Amino acid sequence: MSHIKHYSYVFLLFCFLQIPAHASNKVWLIDVKGGIGPATADHMVRGLEQAQEEQAPFVILKIDTPGGLDSAMRQMIKAVLASGIPIIGYVSPSGARAASAGTYLLYATHIAAMAPATNLGAATPVQIGAPELPSIPNQKDSEGTDEQPALVGSTAMERKIINDAVAYIKGLADLRERNSEWAALAVREGVSLPAEEALSLGVIDLVAADINNLMQQLDGYIVKLGDEELTLSTSEVDLYYHPIDWRNEFLSVITDPNVAYILILIGVYGLIFEASSPGFGVPGIIGAVCIFVALYAFQVLPVSYAGLALMVLGIGLMTAEAFAPSFGILGLGGIAAFTIGSIILMDTELTEYQIAIPLILAFTAFSTVLLVFTLGLLVKARKQVVVTGINHYVGSIAEVESLHGDTPLVRLDGELWQVQCDQPLALHDSVTVRAAEGVGLVVTKNNGER
Image (cartoon, helix red, strand yellow):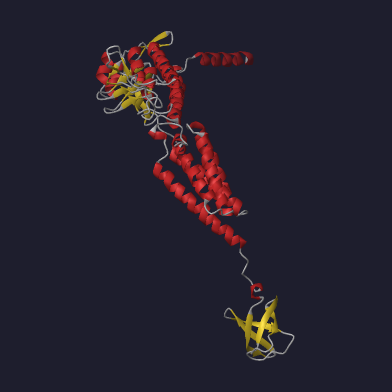
């Protein structure tokens, strides 16, 4: 009987394991807002992973971005392409845009939608579209008129970058069966489109006034997911907004180029002062922590290590000026190296990932004062002769002011001191301090002086 009972439990457990997991009825809404960088990518990718774990019917990416870093964009697109559930890209609210990296991301989604009065495009890589890059001069055609130069791709390296970007976005367009010709124009010529024109040209799939309108249009919409087709149902679903957690907020703060710049400088200053005044501990610990956090941020940011090396060299030269004054040569060289390194530290033309010039100037001035002058004063102070205690009275000349019994007293620095002398002393005798013993002074009588 016990064996039958045991087998019954096993059978029930087997049947329970065969029951398919119940899919969630929550549609996940994930914000892709602001410049696309490491924090944005982390927030979106982890959100997609959690939505798939919850077996959400689909995910809506609410996009409003001017663009961002190529590495972060590709990380996000890889997550979208690998998703096991449909991903809907929705440029919203009105006035929003999916520019540059946002255009690539919108093309990657299974369904692309936009709110009225939004736009997408201008997908030329920023380095290619930088105004300071040289351009090809106008050429004369056979009739002597000016030919219009190519907008981008005037050098071999630029052509490589632009062709890679075109191939990438055309691949996404072909995958989602969208207008690939316009996608190439968005990269090559930086063109943009408003929502209605994007819909008419087959760049996007839907125009929806708001989330509720989008949900209504998605009801019954057929999505191609791999080799299968899936019909969306929005009649019995709830909208779940994926919040930004502490990890993403922390990553967003430390990957701000200005914050990372400040952290690395605090770290270097902390180590310098720990080395100049060993034993205190706190500056060294804070400095080490700041440096490691800054290095993590630099790992995911487009950092020019030549700029970082120039900054370190500048700080080293200014520190050397403090320890070995060289009439300003080391200090001036350090200031120049530090300033140039700070300006070129971020290896990108994106304004969102540039260090603010006022911050650079402020830290240059601060570093100059801190390292050259303040640290120099500390070094000089450490080299000065110690003037505390009673030993510094040796060699001083004083006058016997009073007698306490048989003990003469002299006044030095406003205080009366007991003195010992091999010769008898009287009032107003002049003495010279020769040594200090305990709390008294050993003196020699100055003969001929009273």
